[in-house]
Each structure stands twice: as structure tokens, then as C-alpha cells.
Amino acid sequence: MKLASPLSFIIGMPFVALAPLCTGAVLTFDNSAGDGSIQNSGNWAPGYDALPTTGVHIGEVIDQSAQLEDRQVNDLEITFKGSSAFIANVNSAVRLDDVHFTFQDTSSWTNNNGSGTENLIIGRVSGANSSLTWNSSGSLTNVSQLDVGQTGTGTLTQSAGSISASTFNIHNGTYTSTGGGTLTAGKATVTGGTASIGGTLETTAASGAAMSISAGNSVAIKSGGELKNTQSGASMTIDGGLHLDLDGKLNHNGTINVNAGGTLSADSKLDIRGSTLIHNSGTISVVTTLDLASGTDASLYFSAEAIFAGNTLEVLQLRNGTSLGFEIDGAGNHSTITGNSLQVRMGSTPDLVVDFLVAPTIGQSFDLITGVEKFSNYQGVGSGYEFNTVTVNGLEAGQEYDLIYDTTLANQGFLRLEIIDSIPEPSSAAMLGLGAMGLLMRRRK
Image 1 (spheres, rainbow, N blue to C red):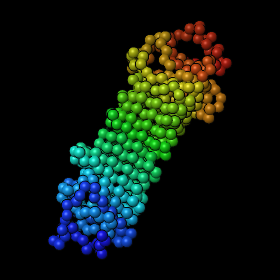
Image 2 (image 1 turned 60 degrees about the vertical axis):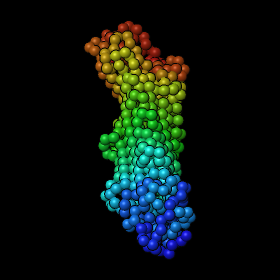
Image 3 (image 1 turned 135 degrees about the vertical axis):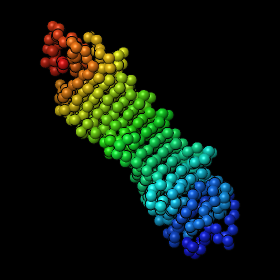
Image 4 (image 1 turned 90 degrees about the horizontal axis):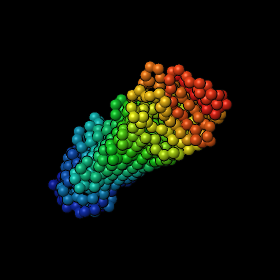
């Protein structure tokens, strides 16, 4: 059925008879031959509330199998094509319950009140299963809070265009992006579902919690995908799991807290750039390369309970201005970076920090890095390179340390911290002789 003009079919006019809508109804709005907009001046929850009767008009309607009736819609499919648009005009919420929206071509969704206070909820009520599929190069804009699932289940899929909201929450459902799609939010939370990012998910908060992943939930950054926040004052909290597939990118300039029980893992390379600080109390697992790239303060710090999983790491890259830190508790618990023919590649100014929560005893030793092939420059050339500055906190009076860079056994070298008496023993001089041959080096303090 085609309608002559946008105003020729006004929902609510006395001469319009509304028939009950059957399950599985399909509505397609396409303005390639005319105006294909829906305007919403009320609080529309398709599937459970009637379509508002004020300010609503429908232009080109293709494949209309039924009309709208209050509380009669189940699994309604609504598709926008061409440059058609869904427009909401009030400070309220659009709730999708048992409704499936698809946007194609250059179609768009706009909340027209201009204040950004409109909420979009995909799957609000218990038992509802709803979805929004964004394949359009157009945009979904001016949303205050975008929720994927509440007590119902929601699915948000994006392959193109841009979606923006003040806050983005996955409460009970999934978000999947592919290709060039970008979702931008002031902050994002994952409290009851998963996110698979093949496009870009960017949080813009300049301070405070920009991103959080609750326990039992996960975010995967797929090949070509990126999770980013370029603000140095913002933080990310991982109590669940964050995983980088091959060529996935994590670009977060603030603090990343991997809490106990949380995991940060990468199929290939974990690249820590800019002023990123990763404070790890959970598990970090990297298959081949852990790269602390040049920056003002790029830092990786392992709390005493933290775990570095696996023994496949081949390159640990510590460039200029970066810092590697370890915390050691009173029982001697600490994390060890384990490698496989590991090259520890250093710029000229990387720093090492070791914090003892309780003073150790003389004679104790702590392996910080194992499976080492060599300590080289940042290009993997040469050997015998060391940290620029070493800081060991928590020692008692009369205690010093030796930092041993050992490569005497092929591919089984280590970086070891030994606690010694401040008065050197004769055996130390003999060991320093080996260091002169480039096989074992000590730094004493």
C-alpha cells in the first residue's frame, strides 16, 4: 500500500480503523520515493503501548502486513531505508520490547528535544527479546542513556555509521560491532552481557570511571576493532574479562585497574601507549608481545596477588619513559613475567619499581622475569641492557639488593632481585667477574 503524502495518513484520525496487529508484522519505511519519516511526540514502547496519536505521520509504507494496535504487537519488525528517519520529540524514553528495528542506507534516528535527555532501552520488560540493527551510514544521536537489556533481553548490532549517547550500558544482552561502525559514549558499563568490538567503541569522560566490566561479563576487541579513551584522567575497571584478538587495539590513556578475578588478555600483542597505567591485581595473559610504548608515563604494575598467565611471551618491550612495577607481600607472593626465549627490549630510560609490603629477610630472592634469551636495546639488537632507574621500597636498615640480569643458560635467563647485607661478601666480587663477560650482570643498591 502506498500513501500519497506524509499527511494523508494520520494515526488517530476518526476515519482510520486500527486493526489488531498479528505476530511477526513487518513495517518498512523508505523515502526514496517520498517522505518516509515516523515522528514520535509521546513515550513509545512498541509492542506494549499504542503508537501516539499526536504528531505521528507515515509516508511511504512498503510491505505493511498490518497496522498498530495497543498491546497486540509481538516481534514487530520495522526497517528504515533510504534517508528515512525516526524522530522522537520529548524528554522521555523509547522502549523496544519484542520489537526489532533495522536501519539501512543513510537512515537515521534523532531525539529532537535537543537536550540529550531521551533514553533508549532495548529490551526493558521481563520476557521481552528486542534488537536494534544499525547498518546505516547515518547516525543515532542525542541519546542520554542507551541500555541494551534491562529485565528483558536486548541486542545491539552495528556495522556502519555512528551511535552516540551520554552513557552506554549493557545490562542484559549483547553489543556487536563490525566494520567502520563507531559508538561514542561519555562512559560505558558491562554489567550483564558481552560486547564484541570490530569497529570503535570510544568513551569520552575526561575523569572518573569511563569504562567498567563487571565480574562474569566480557568484552572482546576483534581484529581491526578499537576500544579507546584518550583522556589521561579517565579510568577503566576490569572485574570481568577484556580480550584483544589478533590486531585488536586498546587505546586508553588513563588508568586500567585489573582487579582480583579480572583478566586482561591478548592473542598476540598488548600495546600500552601514551600515559596508560595498568594496575593489575587479576590476570594478564599475552601470547607474544607486551609493549610499553614511548610516552609520558606508560606503566604496568603487578599487585602481589596478580598473575601473569602462560609462558609464551617472546618480546617484552620497555621503551623510553615507561615503568614496570612489582608488589611483594609479607609471604613473598608476587607476579612473575614468564617468557619463551624472551627478548627484554629496552629503551634508554625505562624504570623498574619494586614495593615490599613487609620488609624481606637477607638471603631472599625474587624472580621478576624468567625464560629470558637476552636483554637488548629496543630494536632487539645487542645485549647487556639494563633499567635506567631501579627503585626498591620497603627495605630495612642494613639491607641492600642485587638486581641480577642472567643469561648464562640459553633461553632460560632471568631478572632476579636478591636481598643482601649492606656489607658485601667476598663471593660477590667473583660473580661480578661473570658480569664483565656479558653473561650475568648485577646492580647493587
